[in-house]
Image 1 (cartoon, one colour):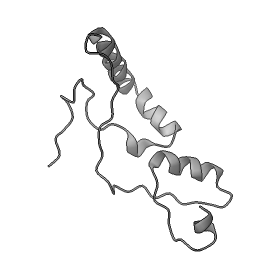
Image 2 (tube, one colour):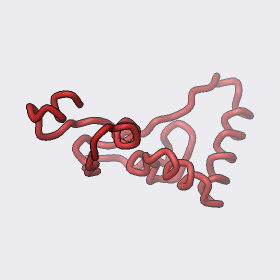
Image 3 (cartoon, rainbow, N blue to C red):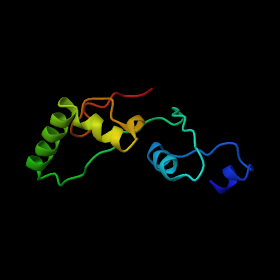
Image 4 (tube, rainbow, N blue to C red):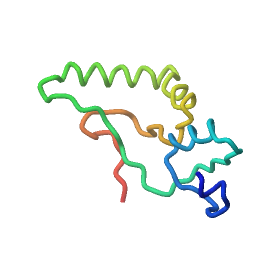
Length: 100
């Protein structure tokens, strides 16, 4: 950011999560431009294979907050909507669309 403010850089490339935080605390106005530069990769929650009840409970909770709109509200509150999951949640990547 020092390089940007001093005029030595024209832009800074960072994650959506960090960009939102920088924008909130920047001493000078910062314009954030969301871009699809890198391919989106799914993330997940790990649990032991023998804890299928935990996996099922987490999946049910995730589906519920997506259905009632809380998932999007959380991502909007933290200004990370570009990072939100676009596919249906599932276990073991079964619902993640395959990229070519």
